Every structure is written in structure tokens, then in C-alpha cells.
Image (cartoon, rainbow, N blue to C red):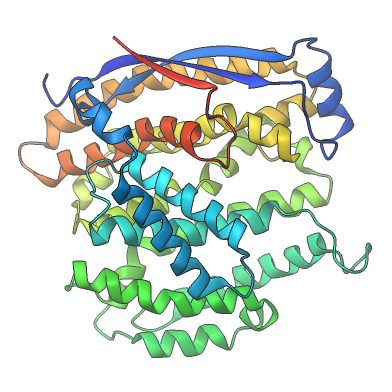
Length: 409
């Protein structure tokens, strides 16, 4: 099969509707119960990268002693770095989730590789921040000092600090580089870090993660590390801030679906993952590719895949834990039925699969021969998107162990 060709598989999934969280709003609970079913069964077509061929599939999905060992090592790493706020049960869940993710979205990485371990570290930090964002537990006072209102204050601080980081001399790949000690000193003196002890632990662990990243890419500096991250990090953090603030002000549902989808897509942080991969693989695509509208649209579509699949295959988790941040929940609050809301997202997936393949072919044909890193980059994106199907199935976070099946032709 040519590198420009992609086969299709059939993804079948089910969502149990007989147990839903009381934390869900009345509108959402009523929409779920009105369907008068205990289970929703759906399916869609998805593309298959070459690395996920039948010959490789068994090895990718096999649970080996090495996988168990690296999961246990990650649990120890979490305990060593974050025991002040992560209990053993939560730590085991984080380790399982990280290994499930990286095994599937980066199947070319061996669990014995440093790249695998480093990616797990980054993802664990992301999971912790995501769980903190989703935590709706109130503080000691149920009014002004609630955790939700404090989060709004923290997001404002994050926005301020990111803005200042953009202005730090040499912190963008320029000739006057700053060192890690300067950055650490600045970070530890921010109000945000001082007020949140768990952020101190995360900031402290970054020094070790960065040092391990340097062992893989010794040409990297702190400036070149930050340069590709700063835009995507800003997009992610500011999108989270926008959604969170508008939700707590009761304004979120006044926006149209497309506007809400834009912010939720950026929240998913796919661009941050891509930046880590380009660092670990020393990929540096030229501007003539990165600015090409076909490439821009293809990568934008990859981002949308991440968000849409999170809404569909993460729906079970949302129902169980009472999380209403997804597009499907947004539509339910606006009066769309559950079945229609899911079918609309499935229609998008179908459209995206077709267009993604066409745009991908153009990119590989137009640039693949002249720029050898293009195919490597495309392969990582393909694998990450397809592999996420198994992440939803295998990670204990989503509760979908026996509810997702992928049928290959």
C-alpha cells in the first residue's frame, strides 16, 4: 500500500444510559432519560495507518511484562514527585492512563525508550491539570470563596504570567538565551505558584523532565523548547479560561455550536502533543509547508478529530462523573435530543475522514519527496488519531473497556 493510501475500519461503540450522575443539570438528565433506552449503540468508519495493519495490531495491543513494569515505574515517579497531593489510588490511575495513551498514539515507540517515558511524564502533568479543571468540589465556603471562583482567579493569573513569558528576553529561540534557573526563579515567584502547592511540585518536576528531553535532543535550548510551544500553550490555556469563565457566569449556552467547538478543540491540546513530538524527533518543517493552506486545514482537521472523538467515546465518562463540558452535553442543554446530538457528531466524523484522506494525499504528494520529515510527521499524526480509539477502550478513566470494538476489513 502506498504511503498516501489509507484503509478504513469500522468502529462500534455503546454508551450505557442506566447510570448517570446526579451532578448533571436537569436539562441533560431529562434528555438522557427521555430516550427510554438503557444503552445507545453507534458506529462509524475511521482510517487505518499502516502501522496499525493486521500484522502489527497484535503486538501493539498486547499487554507485556515490560508494560506492567513501566506502569509501576511511573507510579513510583508520581509518588516521588507528587505524593503531597496525589494518593496511591489516583497515582495508579494516572500511570495507567498515561501508558494506555502513549502505547496507542505512539505505537512506534518501545516502552523501553526514553521518549516513551518522557511523553508519559508530559501527559501525566496534563491529566492532573485536566482533572483539577474538571473538579467541581466546593471550597470551605460555599459562596465567594468556592473552588470554582478561585479557579477563575487562577486562570486570570495564568493569562497574566503567559503574557509576561512572551516578553522575557531570549525566551523564544533568540540569541540571548535564558537558563532554567532563571525560569524556575521567575516561576516560583508568581502568585499562582505560591497559592497552589501542587503547582510547585509540578514546576519542580519539570526540571528533571527537561533534562531528560535534552538527552534525546542535545541541540535544544530552553528558548527553542519554548518557541514552538508558546502559541499552542496560549491557545489551550486561554480557551480553557474562556470556557470556564463563561460557564460559571451562565453565558456559555448563549454561543453557537461552532464558536463553542472552536474553544473546546483548542482546549484538547493536540497542538501541544505535536510540539513534544517535533522536539523528541527533531522535526523542523519549513514555513512553506506549515503556512500552506492545505497543511493548515489538514492539521486543523486532526485537532477536530481529537475533540469530536473525545465527545463521542468520552460520553460514558461524562455521564458517570457529571461532566458537561463537551459538545454533546452543550447540544443537550440547547434542546437537541441525545440521539440527534450523537448522530450529528458522527456525521462530522464521516466528513472529516473523507477530507482528511484527500488533504493528506496532497501533502505527501506535494512535499513528501523534497522534505523527508513530512512523511514522519504525517505518520505520527495518523497514529495518534487512530490509536486514541484504543486509548478510550483501554484506559480505566473512560469506563469503556468492553464497549468499543474496532473491525478491520
